[in-house]
Length: 119
Image (cartoon, rainbow, N blue to C red; front, side):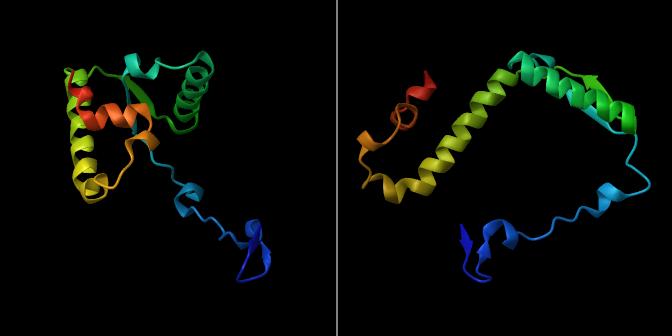
């Protein structure tokens, strides 16, 4: 793919990435990462192993700690959040909904828009 401005490939048009804080001689210490095990482990073995290794590396290299936490009523909060997002999306798209052909939407969107998410 070509970049119109420079007539070079798009990869040549990308800006240089600069992360000055990552090169700091004084890394941030005393960081505690909260880990909700039920959600952390709700993935494939490959992903869980990769994330666990990342936490171990952060601990080994920077001394960051991982703290096991539980989140009471998380299922209720998740549903409330889902409803809030859906309501905000419906409100912002309301002017377009009248023109929409529901056959073009996925089943999940159709169910949400018809109110099936409440059950």
